[in-house]
View 1 (tube, one colour):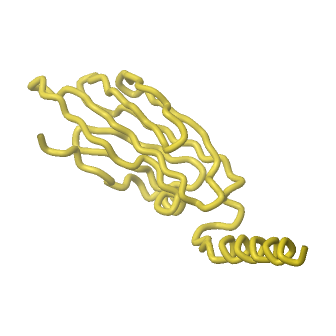
View 2 (cartoon, rainbow, N blue to C red):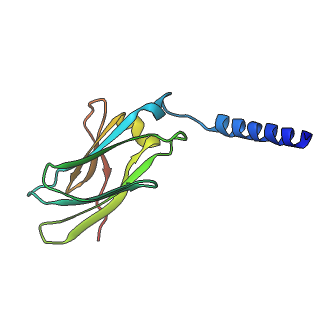
View 3 (cartoon, rainbow, N blue to C red):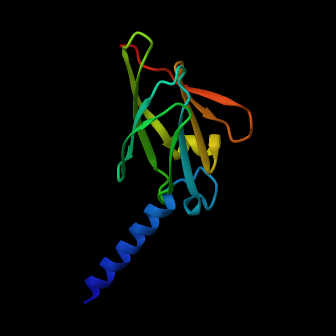
Amino acid sequence: MGSGNSNFKFIVFFVFMAVSSVSVPLVDGIIFDTITVFVQNDLENNQPLTVHCQSRDDDLGEHTLAHRQDIHWSFHIDIFQWTRFWCSMQWSNSTGQIVQGTYDIYFVRRDWRLCGDNCYWSIRESGWYLYHKDGEGLYFMYKWPSN
């Protein structure tokens, strides 16, 4: 009978230590915020952009965006602040060559400081850009991989 009680105490102690050891480097209450990510096709010459975004838990499907069209979705940060979405994108350049790349589009430990509750991405021929939340303009984030 005493063994069950000590097992319970051990489990409670283990859970307490695990939770208390998780570093929370971001803002308190972030897990209650709703985050929205916007991905906009800013390719020149009215090129369509094919976008396929997903996380470990959610597959948002493949979408073809016309020039200046966007896709957006909202979510909540997981309790351990490891929320991550990535996107594969492709388009055809002026010579008809397929240009494609796959990168993180949202990773809470990076992007909370940069864009807060709303992340706006501008996808261009030169690469992927993220708007800074403090109005400091665009951050160049990713270059299209060379084929």
